Image 1 (tube, rainbow, N blue to C red):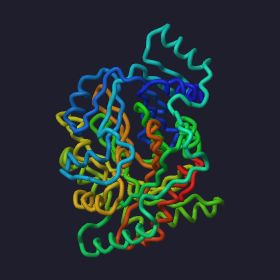
Image 2: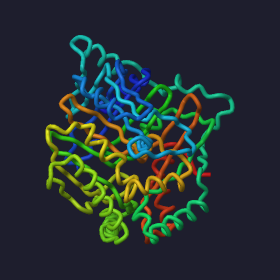
Image 3: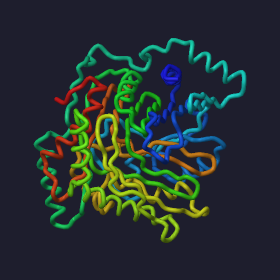
Image 4: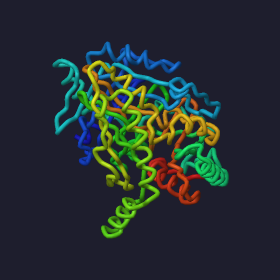
Length: 427
């Protein structure tokens, strides 16, 4: 099955539009409903650069199969009437969802293809027998392209980052807001990578439950996200914000000590509970009265490279509520903004030096019956094969007791897996 999955993605890469969603067989997600699904070749799509959720609503209403796509963080400019003039090296659409010509799904050792026999069988044979080597057709590297090892330049120098964290803490003490998710970009220009090979390396190492590969023309997202933004399953909606990160130990004893320290950290618990309260408020906009509840608070979850503190908030929605409206009232996700959300997003623009674009957005799918599952686009590499621009963004929550140097080190910890997959270092 692993060979089929690898070959299928490399076969798919010949098309202009590709979306892979991979749970990486993560066993601790009790709300998981897919194992591995590949959507290929858009025969219809919705890409509204003005950021209209109404356009997505109309598009999702008229589909007899799953539709796949993403929402950019920059949709905040429409939902909350905000603006941004920061640097943007990737220029993603504000949203993009498509109806795929091919849907290939792997589940419990079986492959399902949305074509009739014999076309489905022929496609399976082509995938299995064709040698899909490293992708090179999309990467026309000029002679000036920088070769490995890659060196990523921080758009925000460390000294400025430390100063900004101190200033953010000052605003928190002054009562301007309670918590801010502050992010930085590391980028390279005139750089060529093989997106498929990098994704395979990243995915194998991270084994994250909300991993995704997205290709849109020459733009790529290589995502190893551990976080679910929002899921609708019947009349139930689920959000699982992450706040709190620690490294893995080198021994079982050290590992347990690190998990216990994370669970008992006053700072991490404060960050987590503030976002849980924000999520409860977001879900209450469309939930039935009194149905919002916290199923789990301060859960410690193990991943391939880190431990995370995750809480689970659920609610019930009525049949009269449109699925897109549920998302509209919760977007962007609280774990990537802070509290109170609108005030924090205004300040984020003054502290950060880059537009987030697809980073801090969401990717996933809608079903024909109105269910959906969307991740949080973090732990991701973004690459434009046409401009040879490469971007990695990472960040963390800043609270009143944050230590600037410790926050910087935690940010680099989150970036470590991405840098390893790229064979890169920070300049």
